[in-house]
Amino acid sequence: MPRFEPKNPDYRAVATATFGRQQAMRSFGISIAHLEPGEIDLTMPYSADFTQQNGFVHAGVITAALDTACGIAAFSLMPDGADILTVEFKTNLLAPAKGERFIFRGAVVKPGRTLTVCEARAYAVSGSGESLIATMTGTLMAMLPRNGSAAA
Amino acid sequence: MPRFEPKNPDYRAVATATFGRQQAMRSFGISIAHLEPGEIDLTMPYSADFTQQNGFVHAGVITAALDTACGIAAFSLMPDGADILTVEFKTNLLAPAKGERFIFRGAVVKPGRTLTVCEARAYAVSGSGESLIATMTGTLMAMLPRNGSAAA
Amino acid sequence: MPRFEPKNPDYRAVATATFGRQQAMRSFGISIAHLEPGEIDLTMPYSADFTQQNGFVHAGVITAALDTACGIAAFSLMPDGADILTVEFKTNLLAPAKGERFIFRGAVVKPGRTLTVCEARAYAVSGSGESLIATMTGTLMAMLPRNGSAAA
Amino acid sequence: MPRFEPKNPDYRAVATATFGRQQAMRSFGISIAHLEPGEIDLTMPYSADFTQQNGFVHAGVITAALDTACGIAAFSLMPDGADILTVEFKTNLLAPAKGERFIFRGAVVKPGRTLTVCEARAYAVSGSGESLIATMTGTLMAMLPRNGSAAA
Image (cartoon, rainbow over all chains, first blue to last red; front, side, top):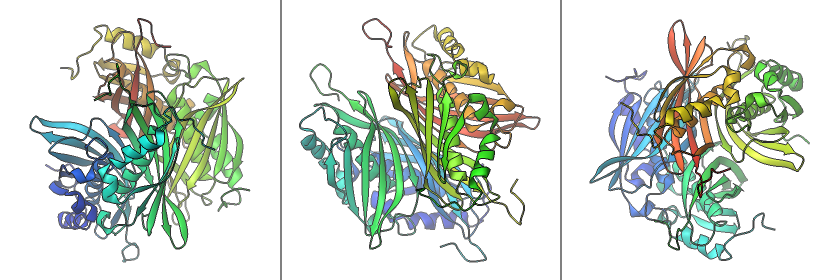
């Protein structure tokens, strides 16, 4: 059972469309594996194109996926017509991002009219299973339409 | 005059080589514009391939550049044979990443034998000049060679 | 010359009064040493009452001072009738908080109608001078009065 | 069943003694409610002495408790003779700290030989139950004894 009640009954279509407009997600090969109100799983294959000096996925790319996981999780609880922007986030890198693919699990901790706080975790997946490689806490802001028109 | 004295007289070659092995930087089109001991400027053109839903550069890509700016700034002060990893960072997004290109300025705040703390700022550049779009504070860790051999 | 123009001509009286209502500041012995629009210096004597296990000032107390420095700096740029709350902050502890007294310098990085981002630094003062011991980046939120009455 | 195996069989006595030497905890009225390897609950009564301008507990005091919760949780997994220091932490304030008392739950996310990452949550307790008011992610560093003598 979902932990949150969406304000927008169309939340799935709107959240999926917003994700789909993030060209960065397409370039990184990231897709949505699971979506519930306030919760999301993303998945990404390993790609040598986005690595740091030792061949592991760059922390910024892991962060991009965690940020989008937080953003779409928060966005799924926002009212119709809202847009969303990231205020800030903090990432802890717990282990090198090495694996065949990666999973990013984001969830809303505290929804709010203006600000929503989310947490997300990144896992590397290989033959031996999943291992936690990074955590994020992020603050997202709803841009609400005023006077019937969407905010710029 | 540089604010810091490098431990490794070869710091420039070593830092530049490490940057050059970050395939993510090449994919994002990021290059080194300036490098002094403990200080670095990176530059990146706008690319539609790495955008979020409104066509601005994705916060994770901005973060990747800020993280590498912090990492190479910290690395330039480390002794010969060291490797470096990011422990954690926090990014504040101050304005949308829209512009023709972007500059990332990183500097060491506090160098240490094990941990080094850095700050970096991202600027969007357009016809009207530079504007601050994001800040990072990051903690980097030196992986020092033991018993004459480099750490794994 | 101040970097920022206050919206409230009475900013000094209002900011000072808000600081004065923070009973925690009185308990820690913290006072305002300097205040300009968007900038503040606080000072605090060493007190054995607020130490961690090695007799240094507890990181949470250093953080309390940094948070109030950010908060009052942000508040000094807000319009008449606003209240302020802290959304989040991140502190890096660079050196043990040992010294005869401490200085906390806070400044606004990016003011905004709803959110303001600030940075602050903590310095230990002893016979040998000032040394940087901690940094903060914080996000503050303006609570604006609606319909003529102050927000709850 | 505890999630972690302590390296020091005496972990409880050592962790409790370290907590007991934090004079700040005594001044804030904070005590240990529960301690397992890598996990701790602290409790604190409301005190008007440590409030911000609206009479709620100051975010820095909430942070002090969260930091000690992280620190003692991390410390409980460290080997005999280690000392501990906080590298950095980030706090999100989700709701005003109003209540009769407060609970702080800290747990190790990733233990390490040098660095340990922890998370902690603060709850306000009143007649109507517990509510989440703040979260922390923190990085702690073990100071290990070298050559048989404790690090300074």
